[in-house]
Length: 158
Image 1 (cartoon, rainbow, N blue to C red):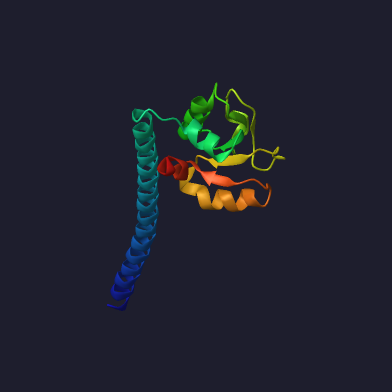
Image 2: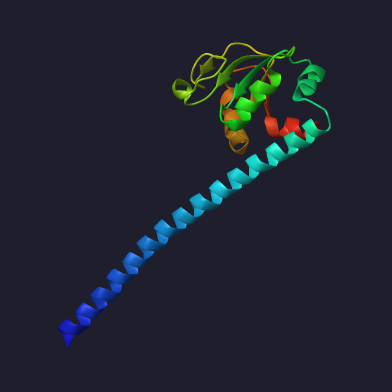
């Protein structure tokens, strides 16, 4: 009887430990999915706001010109960063360079450097990785003296 009880208790403890492990893995997976959804939603909302600005016949060039920014560095060369570079191309606002952690893997019409490189002076750095703006701003503010602004803020100020 003792052996049977010990076996039963051992099995119960093993099942509980396994359940905790599976539960922890499931929780991490669910958190990752939720975070990914939130990021996609923020991206969607930014593009929607940008489209509304364009439908009103406006361009983000107006924001930079009005603010007196002639040279820009773009942080983040995924979808929003690429579109910002495209929007500013051919205007009086020059994208001097882009900044991205994966600089070596990015092909762009401008030089792309990493955040660890020396950052040439510009009038403003625009962060297009809007989900991570606070962390990026904190990191960059130790390296540069220019304003660091979120593309999301620009979109909602237009």
